[in-house]
Length: 326
Image (tube, rainbow, N blue to C red; front, side, top):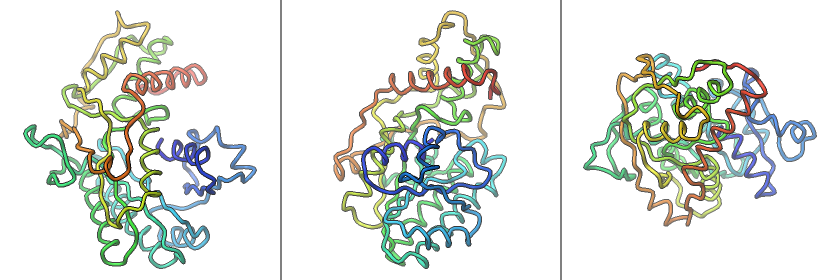
């Protein structure tokens, strides 16, 4: 999701050439609208590579010689990390290490490297410690959050030890069109779209609805990332980034249902498989450090973001028909 929106933003707002790393088996649905530009090598290029393979990263950095690196790749789904903890740690921690080693040894420039950590590093934070600042202690609640702590520390270590100009972001919940269907708000929007089209019964399967999240739009997120790398910020800096609007998962679901033609008939069904062993149940960020450093403020409202997400899934269902209602 994020990489595709970042590509859209950079193509529109800069004159940069953009190199995207892809695995041979990676789905390209989110950049399908860029196919003509990719085929014509019109400022956007795809190269094969994998965070699990050091040589591929070495070759990529040696060829491209980037001015900026946006390291967005990860096993990014917290729930999956309970099932695949080893893969999650290898991809997120060692994958970040491999990328930074490739930059260290094969870059002839001094690129600015954006390290994408996560608000999940904070885990379960007591209410009295809200809002969450950059100095809030880590309390990981999943293998994913542990992996992102490693990613976070690596970014700062490579700045201190080797002088690489890393900038680390702890982005809080961000969503919008193209959001993966394994994430809660996108799963809800997809299920509603499937129910509206008659592919599934009028019900939405849910997990824990009482967690609180602060919502941001992915299009605001990529604007923040671009602004960060072009602003003269000290190497090794770490920033919380997030939206303005906080509510529970239940309230978010109620808003999506209110936008549906089935609003009066949709049922909510608790599915025990959607419950996490441990849940980071409150995430409200203090983003004042990043805002004061860059002047960034969110532009998209919660209602617009969720409305666009629901329209995205309606469009997918209209063109593709029945989809797995996960």
